Image (cartoon, rainbow, N blue to C red; front, side, top):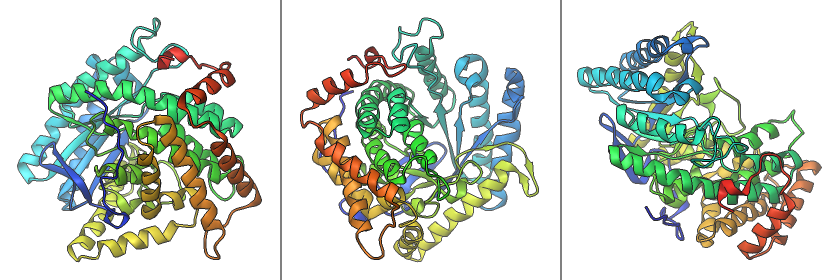
Length: 468
């Protein structure tokens, strides 16, 4: 399928960005809808260590325990809808026909039973593991030892044929370069790794995923730059952490949004992936439904935008929790309660026509807690989206534009009395990022030539992975 670049905004204004409503809602699964006027909790989980002992023990963990517990609790609490997300562990992806097939089919069988008996809307997202390794080769035929590129494609097909409703992946293209960029706080390397190489790899991967999804009549959801931008965000950390300036992390997030957008340009319809914090920018550009995670994902990690990031979500996720007992039931039951009641609050605010007030309260909670949260606030996310589509036909120029716009927004806020408060360390990095990005060439070919020479010795970097 031809890739269709975004050169204009599909969402008409920043004020149109609100949780539960997308310009292009999606229907799938067992009566499920996303972006159709309400928010759905999306519960994500992981099996206990040891459950992967053999296919039977793993199927029992996923199907008889985890899936049944979730559906039981959703009906018990009167939630009208629940989406499950199964982020595949290594064993599922390494031998998909042996380990994954019975899990995928078994989970859907349990969900259908509850849907038929209680009428609950439900669906399941399968997020396939990107096991590819840059040093072995990212393209089919390159990895002679592990055949990981072929196993990724096989995993997608097994999921699509046996019960998945939504297909997603956390693709890894460009990570070898983005890791170098974070370690050296080199924004040019990051832009090359995620904005350029990552976008090339996304196009390679998502044309295949969309094709498989269409053949099997399931939804191609979306990607996330979890491997890159989330690494940057978590290394920047909170107020006790000083290794990576949060101004650097904020800029990397906005550059990453231009890369994650490629999935939709290849034909993915959303909902995109919850751990892609760049989701508000993608929704602003594309009008497609978005899954997000924040304060309901404390089981997995902490961030500085737990409320703000809920402002534009269509599914509200817990990220992922290991299955185990807690005082209130199993872990998946307890965390479903957390995100399910938050979704109920959002949905009630819509029924009372107070949703934009709640959105603004969410946004106000965390606007100035960090530069990254500030950039992802819905009005600023829209501005970054506008910068991307203005250069929409060049994966390089639009990524650079996103980074420059992010730096400008942060700088302007920091100059106001009640705006962002930056340390000298963060201000110095912001100025360096702005200067470095603006100094880059306007011609894509010159930028690529420059980077191929400058980063030729970066560990695991192989231009052939990107057909360069």
